Image (cartoon, rainbow, N blue to C red):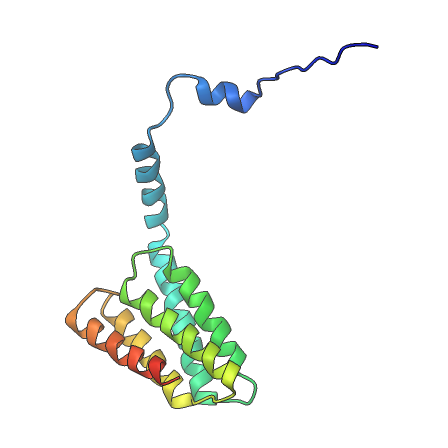
Length: 148
């Protein structure tokens, strides 16, 4: 019977990882942040479009459009998460939670959704800054969310 032998292969990736030089973690993070910032204007425009779509859904209040509100809010939340949007992210998260709870319970109320959408518009108009007004808006949204 022949004896089993094991071979240890060193992959190309392993060789490159152990080679001296390259970028530091801090440099890589800085470059990634710079690359991400180049897309900020386009992302903010897309966020404005999402809020406009939510406003249209609130105006239409069509039957069966509840799921669309959740989907739009979730897409807004996804985009807001890539950038420092502070209160906008929190407001979008609140709208996702609210719409999810209302769908689960079957107790959909458009005024609660409309308040969230108006809050999103106000926060966007204020450039997503952490202001006293934004804190008050988020406090009001959390009050609505606690009701459900």
